Length: 437
Image (cartoon, rainbow, N blue to C red; front, side, top):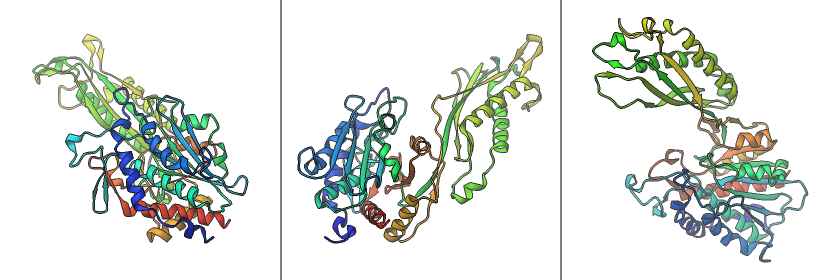
């Protein structure tokens, strides 16, 4: 038998596109946006199982150990194992998820819910994130089951449910970890396959969603001296909050090492105010936004600080800048003060800084350089759920992906067949390199 690379060879394009076509055909039914849209990931899992079961111990057709693990009906996960010969030697490809974000067909130039092909472009919701990876890793595991190379390493693939929305828990990888089903993966590198652009993503951001509610006093806009304008109060308060945030959480020296595109940020993204005439200063308004935090800061510390800033502003509201000669936030004769309250979504995500000294990182870099022609690791303050928890549990997590960042969660999502072919080659190179240890 030839070398691992010779045996596993290249991605079978026809087989891959045929499988991806089936998966994108299910994308409408795996959109994840509860309570309106709850995905049925088993619709995708069924196609994965159709490909892999013929090469499994389940049917007697091959060496793959296939486990369809379900905690919520219709929303299963799939764990596939190709056994190696050395106990405790393992590598895994995890994070390929079988749900997608929503898509509105009216806004797309092509049908999001069926695969269309335009030259090298494979188009449809999930091609980049993450059904393209599901199809590619399924093809890799099928190739292992079919060619049966003698490997020291056990190779494991984990296809997960419920990655795109965490408002419903106990469905996907969080539950697999809780039940100890991924414990053996701690013994080797875990490659989380859900980023883009073919380069190692070595850092991600934490995320805290916040809401700042401001209460003033409603009055006719022709008599502004009798009002407390919550819009002005919000704007001035938010400026102070942001300035204090950037002073307390400045760019961190390690961000340069990890090549983060941006430092930590705290900014508004939504503004809500009550309906009413333009001649009416409203009673209240709400600004919502988020903090994106590089992994060198602690999300709990940030929440405490934001609360502290708001408490200070409330206590010293007279000292806040006003806007014009009659703008004010206190009406002493009426014993009224403007007031701010800040609240946070329960869910906080922590960022990840991958271990740059680990074997997993080194083999990923070497494979990338070999196949793509260069290696240029990057970090972003976009957030990936779940992987910090895995890292904290002792997993050597490395992240990479072969879709296109420009089309991630976007309309007209697509990936390139040539990129997916390179991804397959990178994974073959990783398997091959780890055999030499």
